Length: 228
Image 1 (cartoon, rainbow, N blue to C red):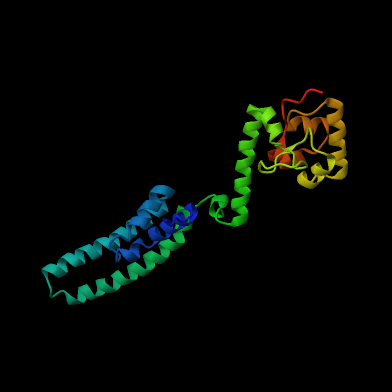
Image 2: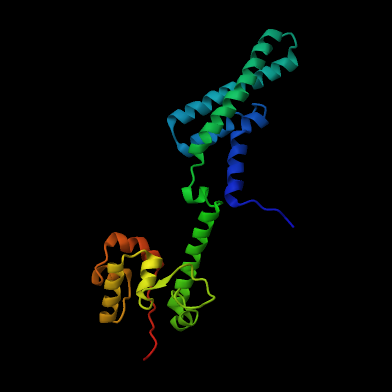
């Protein structure tokens, strides 16, 4: 069985490998991550940093060439060797610090390996799928009891709540509404025959806009009601 790493871990591994270019290239490619950073961040200062590291690399390249041709250049070669070692250390540390700016990511993506975050993202995806199914086939949605956590069912809808059908207690327990808000919503839906959008819930049931915005992702309004 092939082993696989989560996408975010592979991404982090790649950024670390990027930052370690000065080390694993023995300083010969020390300028590369800084050139990439200059291209991505588009700052004059970053271009100057990239040019500085390239100049140091150039000195080392020249020294390697002179050493091959003239073995008597021991003193100069010794100084350049010290510079070479310093370049490897300094450039590696600098790149490790810089990588956070170069590879800035969405916090949700950075935390997607956390079980709680992964579960929340999976539930969000299930809600989107269940809502799409309900919009396409309301009758099937009722058979699957989408949005009805108060009834026995097997289908996972990610936590949707059909505000036109669920009892008042579900509005309190699953959506976090106060008893007064839930009671007002139930009374209003009975008077109107149901809601068709979160905007109607806000306008007619007089729920605060902030409250509606917080729970909108979980609200479901089945468009097809069974005949009495």
